[in-house]
Amino acid sequence: MLRYLSLSIIPIILFIIITYGMIKDRKVYEWFVEGAKDGLSVCIRIFPYLLAMVVGVKIFREAGLIDILNFLLSPITVLIGLPKEILPLILIKPLSGSGAIGVFTDILKTYGVDNYIGLVSSVIMGTTETIFYTITVYFGAVKIKKIRHTLWAAVMADMTAIIMALIIVKTIL
Image 1 (cartoon, rainbow, N blue to C red):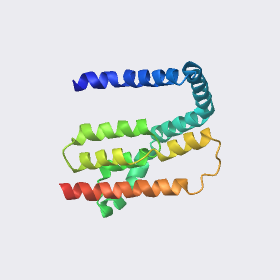
Image 2 (cartoon, rainbow, N blue to C red):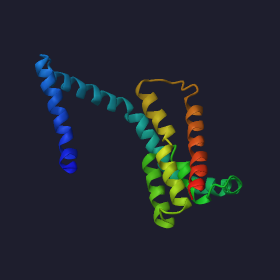
Image 3 (cartoon, rainbow, N blue to C red):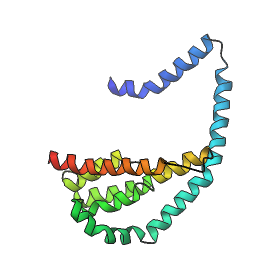
Image 4 (cartoon, rainbow, N blue to C red):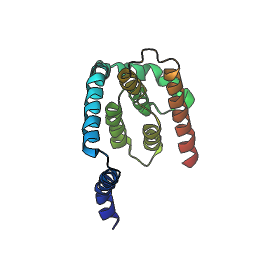
């Protein structure tokens, strides 16, 4: 029953929206086409920002900068109780969601899911944001040049999420 409901919920919602629009004598199809045009223009506007971000992340990973940062920051991670195995995830997540998924998958394959490293990386993956990607794409889409306090607020939110992940998982285990 639940499977049937989950498969049919989107068609039901679409049917309700179209029926409601027809009852209210609205031009549902024309509105859909206008929305599609607007969506396409947004895609075209944000594409350069998105491309620059993807290329930058690829260069960052392929040049080995993640490994260098991991090596340099390892002594600090020991002091704060952060497993050094999770550091690549913390470094790549603000830049790229797909890159973070790749690193996260490697962590789970190597260390498993039912231990401190697996659980902390899972919580970090679910509670942090792809900060630079999000700022680049969304601020670029609306042509905002000065991000003001957005970056620092987002970094602080991610740092809080990482610290809380360490504390909560350590408490649970």
